[in-house]
Length: 222
Length: 279
Image (cartoon, rainbow over all chains, first blue to last red; front, side, top):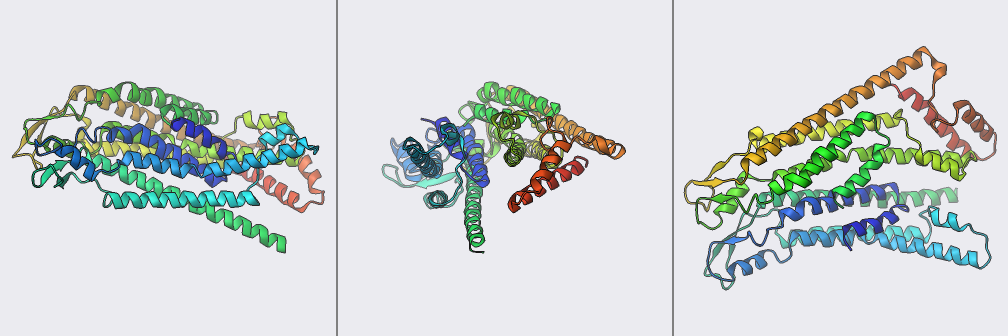
């Protein structure tokens, strides 16, 4: 199971999304997952072996690296992308359940075209509307949580060039140098910006869905 | 998702591009992305591990490398290629929207059989009307991104040349320290190569822009001199505009209000499309 498989799984969900949902999925795959795989993983590739401390004390470098980087950015981004893309599976499950119900009715004697059932686009209304809206809400929550986790863990979004470490077994305070800090800061800000864009798209989609349902309700009452 | 995935996504767009657009896409994939993946990444592979400074001071190497190479060429090229290829997705989205509208119209005019639906999916969209504007915008964005990245490269690495030796004074290096870059000549050659292909792509984009504008103006002048020869059918090639208008007129006499609105809106779109196929 890799990013390609996730893309295959989510591509199926794309069919039942709104236009904004389709744009969001494209942004997710091209500007986040692709950048992560093609560029960011190389930048962070040598993060531990090129983390250099001004001491010969064995173990000091490992301990200091672990102290300043409890979870690597790359792993956090991977987790964020997985959590953010999986609420869409709630919608896929609901659609599959709706189809299963229709097939069951067909088997019980009602006339339904099986081929049409497989290909028809299911409209986002009724209980599916609630499922879809919940999935967007969860996406927004996960994005916000991970952005906060990043901010909290790394004291802001900038990668320092030099960190001063006092953990045992380092003698006194030791200077440790982070590898490629400028490049890492650039990519962190880029990923943050795209994450912000994805949140905006999700909020826009939420507003669109709520407005659509309100308009439908007002048309029904008038 | 990697370069192969991007290729799959973009080759769908290729169908609705002009001939120059297809050449541009081939140049991007063969002379830029492929060269990046197959050659340039190996050249820059040991850029940090083989960056050597004439000192044993711990941390001096890292700091000097970071000072002279804030962002690696490889990452800049990867970002440039992704940003330059994605405006084509605007066109893909617009085409998908137009196909969706055509399918809806087919359903309403009673031609919603499998053959016609397949035809809608397969037929090449003419670059006219609002699609023309979307296409032109995508080409303009491509040009803009190419130019911006070439400028960023020039700012970060003046002269596009990779030096053999750099002198570094950043803390914690004691005094001024000589640092040596790995494979500077090979890197300079690839930088120049990528710069040249980038320029070729800029030239192709400008040619495409000129071609689109000239074609639109020629179509407009042809339309003005011979108004009855308009072929701006919403469907494309099979259905004549009179046949479609007859269908619409028939349906407009029906009682359904929303149907009337939908058809009136679409026939309005068609007229607008014919007008806007010119600049």
